[in-house]
Length: 135
Image (cartoon, rainbow, N blue to C red; front, top):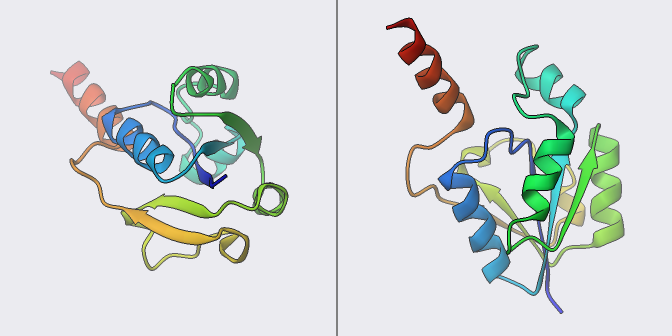
């Protein structure tokens, strides 16, 4: 059995997220998605985030056909512990992370950078929403 893992905020789910998740699942038999907690997202992205709380994000993820398991983490240490426990054969990461520090890399198996097919991002989605409201 091949184990695959992705992690991130997945705050406002968009087509880019679904593409990455489906691609990750195509690489193996079992896909684990690890989600940042609300506190971790607020710390990393600002006090107005996340838009969707952890419970909502976990429920959405658990109901995506490609996803086999969902866990959450609040720190780099907790994420590393998930990797140590799960020992994925492959880890899929968005290509925007190339050249950056990747937490848990040593426990991640093969790292695969997923090239976006479009310009979707949660930040852009929120910016577009705010800009439309100002018109």
